[in-house]
Image (cartoon, rainbow, N blue to C red; front, side, top):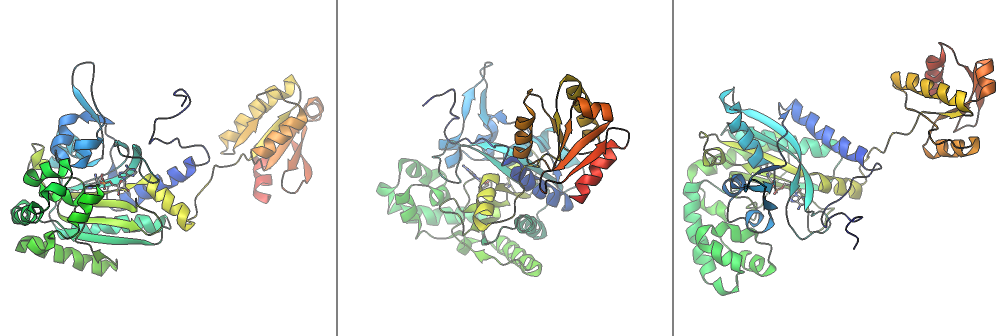
Length: 425
Ligand code: HAM
C-alpha cells in the first residue's frame, strides 16, 4: 500500500460529486433543529482524555477499545472525540451556559473517531449531527427530541426507519438490576470474553452490548431492565410514550437497547433502518441525568441524540431519496487571444457579482478544446469572444442544450442580457 496516496483505513474522502449531499443533510438537520430552539456549537476535535473516561465511562467499548488517545508534546493525555455529548457538556460547564435560562439547547455537526473494525456504515472517522438539551427532567423534552429526529428523517425522505425505545432507569433502580444481571451471568462466566468478565463486577449492563458473538448469545436471555424500573422511572417512561402517541410517531419497545455509553439514564432510543445491513442504527440517543454532576457541575438532568451522517447518506441512497449534485456552470466565456482573455476575466467577475456561475479559460486552450471543456462543466451558455467580437462589441452566445446562437452586446446591458438568456433556457 502506498502510504502517500492512500488514506488511513476507516476514513473517507468526500469528493465534489458528493459534498452537496453532505451539505444538504447537514443544513436540513441544523435548520430543523433551529426550529426546535437548538443553536449550533463547535467544540474542539480533541479534549483531555479524562473527560471521556468520566463522561463516556471506563467500562464501555468506546473507552476500553476504541479511543484515539495520545500524549501531546506537553505530556498531556489527549483523545480525539469519540462522540459529541461529553464535549458539549464540558463546553456548557466551561462557559457557564447553564446559568442562563434553562433548558440550554445546542446542536452540532462533528467528526468523531473510534478505532473500530471498518465495514459498510462503520468507520474510524465518521460524522455526527447531534443535539443536546441541558436542564430539564420533563418527559416532554424526551419526546420533543425524538420528534425532531423523526422530522429530520422525514425531511431527508428517509423511509423504512423504525423507532425503538426503552428505559434503563436511574442509579437506584439499576442497582437492583445489576444484582439480577450478576446472578444471571454467574452461570456463564467461563464463556464470556475477558473484557466482559472484568465488567461483571463493575458494570454488568455493559455485557449486553458487547460486540463478541459469544457474549451476545449469552446476553440474549439475560433479564431486562424494564422489569426493574422504580415507580418514578416507570411513570417517566409512560409519560414519554403518551407524548409520542400524541405526536403520532409509531414506536416499538425494545428491551434490548442499553446503548454503548455509560451516561444514559431512563429513556434511550434508536432509529433503525431496514435498508442497511449490520450497521442499521442511523440515530441513537437518550437521557443522561447524572452526566453534568459527574463532570463536576450541578445536578442538571439532560438528554440528546446523534445521527451518523455517513449512515444517513447510505440509507438515502438505498431508498432512492432525492439528493442534490454539484451546481453546474451557468456561462462559459470562450476567449480567443490575449485581449479577449483579459476581457473575459473582467466579464466573468461581473457575472459572478450577479450570482451567475461563470467560468473562462485559464489554460490557454484552443476554441474547440474550450467548447469541449465548457460542455463537460455542464455550461448552459457559452459566449465566444475574440478580436472580431471585441471590435464589433457583440459576443456570440450559444445555448448548449438547443444549439441556438444569438448575439449579446458587450456593454452595460451585458449581465442583464445573460441573466435573461439563462431564464429563457
Ligand atoms: P452513538 O450511538 O454512539 O451515540 O452514536 C450515534 C450515531 O453515530 C449512531 O447511531 C451511528 O449512526 C453513528 N455512528 C456511531 N459509530 C459510528 C461509526 N463507527 N461509523 C459510522 N457511524 C457511526 C452517541 O455518540 C451519543 N453521543 C448520542 C447522544 C447524544 N446521546 C445523547 N446525546
